Amino acid sequence: MINKLTLIGVGLIGGSFALALREAGLVREVVGVGRSAENLSAALGMYVIDAYAEAAQAVQGADVVLLAVPVGQMGAMMSAIAPYLAPNTIVTDVGSTKQDVVALARANLSQHLTHFVPGHPIAGAEQSGVKAARGDLFRERNVVLTPLPETNPAAKELIAQLWQSCGAKVSEMAPALHDEVFAAVSHLPHLLAFGLVDYIAAQPNAEALFGFAASGFRDFTRIAGSSPEMWRDICLANRDALLQQLAGYEAELARIKQLIERGDSAALAQLFVAARDARQKHLKH
Amino acid sequence: MINKLTLIGVGLIGGSFALALREAGLVREVVGVGRSAENLSAALGMYVIDAYAEAAQAVQGADVVLLAVPVGQMGAMMSAIAPYLAPNTIVTDVGSTKQDVVALARANLSQHLTHFVPGHPIAGAEQSGVKAARGDLFRERNVVLTPLPETNPAAKELIAQLWQSCGAKVSEMAPALHDEVFAAVSHLPHLLAFGLVDYIAAQPNAEALFGFAASGFRDFTRIAGSSPEMWRDICLANRDALLQQLAGYEAELARIKQLIERGDSAALAQLFVAARDARQKHLKH
Image (cartoon, rainbow over all chains, first blue to last red; front, side, top):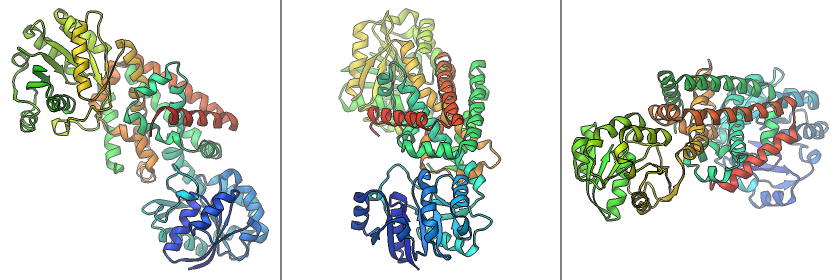
């Protein structure tokens, strides 16, 4: 049970976290911080938050502060709250990249690193805003924590328990490994999907091309409907790991291209079979 | 109303075509040709076909022959039926690539080109076999016909009407344009999805990587669950157009890579916005 939770950023992720903890009866008071009065009013109306305030005020006396703003605003927010944090207030975040958040924390929360627990819930980014928040958003989803060497084990444990109370599967990774893993299975596919749509859209007969696209194309490019600003930030924040994965994928495409050029039917079939089998083995649908 | 329809290949596509025409009351007798006795029995049980026979016998007296076998078997089938076709029997096909089918027809149906109508229904290839067949498979789907200069307009019109009776939107293209269009919006995305799964599966920590893949990754790679044999055949049959699209896409990736390397936040955001907007404009979901 925590007495006071402060949400810095009251959107889909922060709002769903608060709703899930409320439903579990684990939080008494939730205070929100945000830039949009309309969104904060909606959050009040949904009982996601009990009140809202400026960041400096909102964090005072909080047991847990959840930073759920775009990575581009994270450093400024950390700097704004740092002077007002009580020593035992635990700060955590939900950023999609972790090495950059850790670097920002080292720069802006240097007096508070024992109580900083970097985190990343892997949950739907197709929608945004508090109106899309729901208490079951994290059920059966992965949450990755990337604690620092300085992080207090009890602080980490509390954050892990809160996410577990939301129904999430919590695991732990070093920040660099986290960024490698998500460069491969999230950031790279987003880049490839944005790239394909941009490539098709730039062709002179784009309208006809899209007109003949079937359900496979729609599935493949669905993630190109995600927030451009968020994905720009992620691509730049995780630049090194993403460029490495992109280079690996380009080498894979070059290899496939050679197989097609050579007409190597057997090797091409083998590659497609391996891919289909790997997908069937590891992914449910 | 056609008196006799012959399905060469009684699977998802051929079976659904027959069911749709039956439901529309447009066909009297359907005769199937296939290699699997079990599949042909299932087709009889489902009233997809009324009888089955060897190809040479099955096409005799047919008004329409639908070639619905993998492109790899198409030439042999054309050659097998050619001597037994009545002059007024219309032959059509459902192959995913059209220049190669046209070349096979020129080689194997040279006496029958006036009555050959190449076609491509754009409908789900996730499932296969007659058991997946259903009369509404083509409703609201595109069917592209790629008639030859020799094709009799009345023959083309009949095939167009039959597909329209199945609920499909019928359009017409030159075979080369068809292959270009589908290289871009179908064959390339399949290649990219197979390639991504193969690339991830080859990494030492593949199991962990797949374990953290979220719904976006599953959507993106869904088409990598498609038939490896079919997609190998398509990639090789449409090699030139596919390699051209692949080269164009590689150039797009190289451009995106430069933006990330340079940290060009504005251009990256612009590209992502353009892609998201194009997708929203042209695709429904």
